Length: 224
Image (cartoon, rainbow, N blue to C red; front, side, top):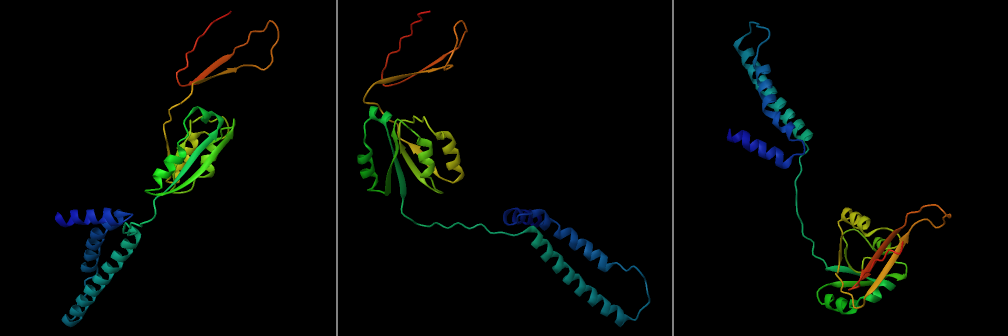
């Protein structure tokens, strides 16, 4: 029982198809009975019988060896190894340069200087003016096994979303982290979504979206 348990552990640990290893014992048993059994009983001299016994033993061991080698090949053995490769710690610091970042304190230079005491830092500016394509900018700077630190308010008004980029980064075994920002100014914005043109007497539906940074009070008045 201990032998069978050890064989099972060995098969599942080092073989891609362990079921092939489990067939070794049944095949050995079948080969043993096939070579031992005499299908036709013929009277022979004792010397001939002894030579045949030796021949059967040789055939048994060679057949078993061939069967074992074939099953091991089918089982596809493998060995897992781990190797640690030392390298320089590296991070990409992406700084949002769009106008919406004017509401937050710019500490990117101080942060980069502090990080450089521990690892290699590459600083890049992303986003320009009122166009905040942060997702596309991160995607353009993303490579396999990267570590990206993002300084941004997360306001994306153009291009790919940050969620889609983060999902793609996980497939590349890369990480994207962002710093939580505290605003130094208050600001609010209103977006009205509805038809661009309409006619008199036709009912239309409009959606009003409000967003703000900092402590901005909101007041709603229906002038209907």
